Length: 226
Image (cartoon, rainbow, N blue to C red; front, top):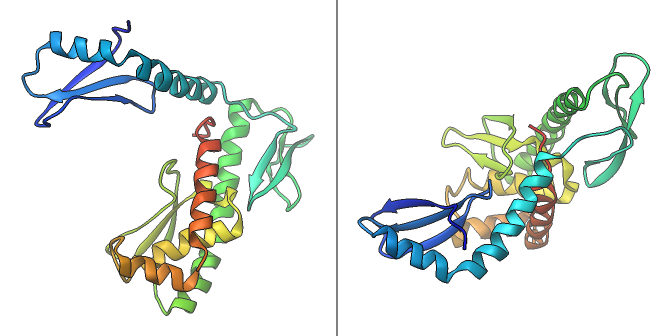
């Protein structure tokens, strides 16, 4: 039986088990719950812990061992492009290949590639936002790129649209869905039926693209870029 868990007390009414993204086991319990009761609760759910903790722990291990090497296939707009070594100090993307200086370390390659992806994301997303905003009759204030790993995009109350650079790994149709989603928040700052009607009017098949994002998210869950 595992003893490696953290107890978190709160005003909740029931006990619950959670596996964090770092593969830590949390037991969330009502204030005042005796540790003996918590231990019994954990003991009763060993099978659940073994199943779920093992899967997350494997993800964490793969993420920690993630390393970019020359010859790797990198995603951009849903396509795969090889990472090639250059004999001179240079790095970038030429439309067919990603490339970096052959003498760079794995960590230096990763840092350089993140910079490349951020530049590509700014260009792709700024253009797409401009086109779709015009189509939807909207006027966002700014397009900003961030490194969020679990949130593809967001819309601020000031009218700024924020997108993760990871998004440009997705297919263009999938990126369009995220852009339309955030633009729709300029009209409805919620996820009401009215909001989804706005999205559907522009992209009738948006649910298909939403599922593609889940697949990409799963692939990225075992990669550590930043």
